[in-house]
Structure formats: structure tokens, C-alpha cells
Image (cartoon, rainbow, N blue to C red; front, side, top):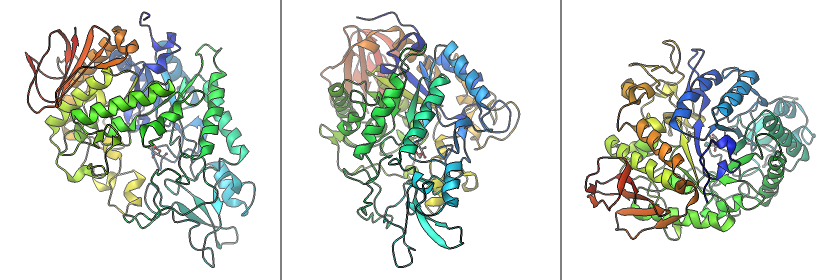
Length: 567
Ligand code: BGC
């Protein structure tokens, strides 16, 4: 049933069971010393990734961008931002990654571009009702003088979802829709030119050798053109942007048509050296079956599992979430994905060290309102507890069937930097929330590679990284953890080596064992068992040979500890 493990490059089904490492280019590694990570730095860091044992890399946007939203505001989809390098650098990076056996996904941002994109600049200069404006979502305002936004919709980053423009005669004019920041105008996907534009973007990067795309907000492109108001959100005073079924800007029927078209383009590469290309969808839809419909036959390949990302750290919630995820994906014949961190959420070491660790789940899905506060900085963190749990969560994740995503720095056990000073914050959420939400910069602090003080080998010289690193990160660097038995990094390396060498962890289904209220236990095939004790008390260690443990095990498994057993 199983074949000898090779690299992801030899395996057309790599996307069904890969471990994918997310690179956030600005914070991964800086080769030119300007304080910003870059593509040459990424290339220098590929050895670390190969040694870590991942199969693929997902690169967050590296395109030309004013970086209002960390590159998710794209001004040229077919070029590289100068702070990251050049198209040639990208080609060299792709070749080098492939030489090491790593597949490479890049980000596609189809909902919006940057307000500096030439097509949006042209739309601004053109008249209301012109073909140029029709590439975006321009509307007249409400009220006698059109001075009110066309709908009550609130933006995900705070404030209205509409921005009024000044027309060429100097008068206040139409409004354009921006689901995120005003600097990120939404494309009008009802216009065939937008559809054709993105076909060409896909082909541009497929032709340059990318193995696939992560699709940013993959559920948002189509719009209910009747523009109905949404239910007012008492917290903001604007219409809710939440993803209720029927919301006018989420999960509209047109989204499926777009996905199916892209799938055909990706499949048309089947006869090339890299084979058919793949997609991972970023679409947090509830319940998980709704999300799994995005990976039904002929649509996208995989979709991020946000239920896993936000699931609280209890045996019962984790078991319900895993069972339901697997059932939802089995029903459509797609692999599940697992993810505990990305560039948008507080890092797991910190999240799992809070009094509330996430959302509760029961057999029917997410239970009621999450007890987890959105801005959880207000709660104290027990970092030691969080670190123990994050280690256990990693072993749990890597033992599950499907694809695992890990976000750069997770393998080092980096905590969230919660105390970044206000003057360095760059996330647009900080300004748009009227300085009430600090936003996502705390998980984007540049990685420590070596050395005893900032920039910890992130860049070649003493240059200041774009976000300051904490004073206490020397012990967390790649160099400091390498070869240290039991370090976070060595735990990840060992886990990925075992996962890679053990075909059961790729091919076999998950079978739950009977377990107690605090313990999860499951097998993959006849010879591999994973146990996670959610604690707080110890649990008996069953018979078998310990392959790997996230903490010290004897004849018992301590609380917040995971063990892999050969049985
Ligand atoms: C990305 C965010 C980004 C947003 C708008 C998201 O889902 O992950 O980082 O701010 O899309 O592009």
C-alpha cells in the first residue's frame, strides 16, 4: 500500500500529506542588511528548512507593494517588491528549493489590490460609469448629496467598507468598496477582464515554476450586486462583516465558478515537469462542512482548517474538532489540513498559555459564542505552560492524517511579542481600530538565527530589523537550539523525520482508542499510537516503545504532554 518516501518533488500526491512551512518574507531572513527579510535571505534559509524536514514552502506575498498590509496590498502581481529582490532572485529561489526537493506555494490575493495598482489609479482618474471604474466596486453614495456610503458594511480592519473619492472636478464623488484597508480596493469579479487578468497571473507564476497558490480570502471575490445592508454590529456601529450564510460579500455562488476555472488552469499543467499545480484556500467558514465544500471534486485541493487553529486546548474539544474535520473532508475525498499558527494570529506558545486557549467544540461543531477574547493580550500568559502545550500540540498535529502547516518560528517555540511599542506597530488594524487593537505584528517579529543579541543573525550586520526583537531571544535561535536534546527545534526535527520515515503516518486512517476525559489516544495503522494528556494529572503510559515525547515520560505521561509510541 505504501511506497518508499522520497521528496515532494518525486510525488504528484505531495499535497495530500505534506508538511508546509510558511515564510513571511519580511521577517524570515535578511541578506542585504536593510532590516527587512528578502528572497536572497530566504534562499540562505532553505538549508534550515531542508534539515527541519518540511516538504514544501508557502511564501506570503513577495510582490511589488506599498506594504500597507504586509504585502497583501499588491501593486504588481507579476513582479517582486524591491525590498525583497527581483524576479531573477525569485527564479533562483524556486530552482534552489526544487533542487532540495521542496515544493513552493506562493500567495494569490484576488479579492483586492493596492490603491497604487496602475489599474486602480486609472479607475480613479476615469469618470463614474467608465469601463476603468468597472474593474473595481464603485458606487454612488446614499443621501441627497451622495455623502453617505452605499451600504452600512463595516470593514474587517475597522471603519466603513467604503471610501469616497474626489472626482477630477475636485468634488466629492463616488465610493469604492474595500473589505480590508482603504488602500486595498476590491476587484469587481463580475467583470470578465478581472477574470482574464487573474488567469494570466496564475499562468505567469505557474510558467515560472511555482507548485501552487495559497488563495487569500478565497471566499470573498463574488459580491451580491444588490448590495443589501447587513445586520448592525453593536460593537462597531457598522453592518456586520461576519460570515453568516447569505452575507453579501462571502461565499456567494460566483466564488465556486472562479475556483473551478482556476482548477482547470492548474490541471492543464499536468504534463509539465512539476506536474499539475495545487491550491490551498484561506476561507474560514463555519461549520467545517461549508469549508470542505471548497475542496470538492473539480474545485480547490485543500483548505486551511481554522477550527483546528482556534480549538481550545481540551481533550474533548480537540477530539470533536478532529473527528468532524476528518468526516467533512472524507465526504468530499479531500485531505484535511492542520494548522496552529500563521501570520495573522497570536503564536501558539502564548495562546496556549492563556487562561482561555480557544473555542470549545462539541459533536455539533463550535459551541455557542467563543469564550476566547479577540484581544487576549489583556490576559496573563503562563509561558512555560504554553510552551509545554505547544510542543504537545505539534506532536498531535504531525500525527494526524493530511497536511500540516507550520508558520516560521513555530519550530523555535517563539512566543507572541505582546509588548511591541505603539510607535513601531505597522498592522493597519492598529490605526483603523482607533488604537484599541494592536493587531498582528506580535507574530511577525523577525526570526532569531544565531548570536546573543538583536538582530540574532537575522541580517548580516547590526542593522535594526523592521520590528524590534525582544532582548531574551538568544536561547531561542536556530543555532542555540541545534543539537540541544529536547529543544523545541530538535523536537520538530525529530517529529518530521519520524513522520517522513513512517508510511503509516501518510497512508493510514486515524482510529481512536478508548480514552479518559483528559486523554486523547489514537492509532495510525497497527504499529503507531499517539497519546496526548491534556492534564493536569499524569496518565498511565501504555505498552510500546517511545518514539518521541514532547516532555519527560516515565511510566506515566505528565499533563500537557504528547507521546508517540511504536506498538
Ligand atoms: C491575510 C491577511 C490579510 C488579509 C487581507 C488575510 O486573510 O492572511 O494577512 O491582511 O487577508 O489580504
